[in-house]
Image (cartoon, rainbow, N blue to C red; front, top):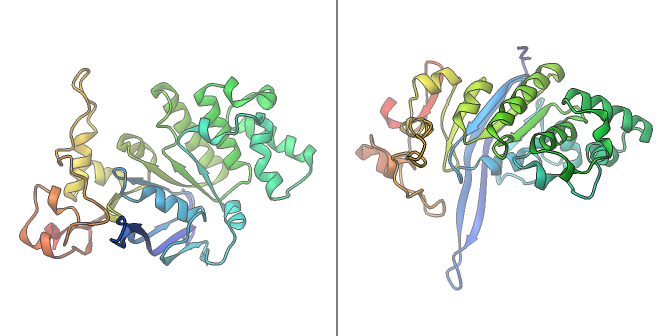
Length: 320
């Protein structure tokens, strides 16, 4: 892997706060969807982001795509701030691949038109060039030229996801945000799509931000993994560290919960209790302490700082 000196993507102290109405006469309260997120991503790297629903993964993706502004902090691509850039400019460099290809593809458009849409929006080339580029990218994602005139409903889930990938890559973006790109697919098709994504990364020198709640997927793909909880990064490390020596009690609980359940046993439990905390009224101190088996008195009152331990960064009082 080639990593240049300037990170291709930098997040510096990103915060995103939503004001949520408490109901009539009660005013509003802040919901801190992202609370001081700082990350750097080098060219050609795959950064995995994992966490339960509500941890802020999707809000982060929207900010990176220019669909939402952070409340504070800044996003840099190749050292340049995105502040003041139009969404159209950002979309040349950052493209998404979403979870469900069926809902993200227009059912009334032919595949050729769907894939060439970004070229038309950005005013790149003429119809003949569009067709040439579409055929080229179809070949890259493993689809035959004859699907050009098909509609999405004539294709399987895996084929539709290949169309979504082709559409995302036709502009040759630098960064691709993969938001649960295989969770809607059959297991047999999942691995094909993941292998395809990794081949394309090498071939087109892409950088991936890979959002998932499926740790096993992240383990295979990521160079680095970030574990998020209630809008904060609680642990960041290479995958072998996360999987062999998780430092944060929350990471341990997540790993404990992804062991494949025995048939008939139902979904495994995280042993964290059912109560995911209310983000409008987060716990004091460490946000994880009400669900943590290793919580100490200090955890209730003081928020921990991010510590560097060997190749891991951990936000936990256990390591102070």
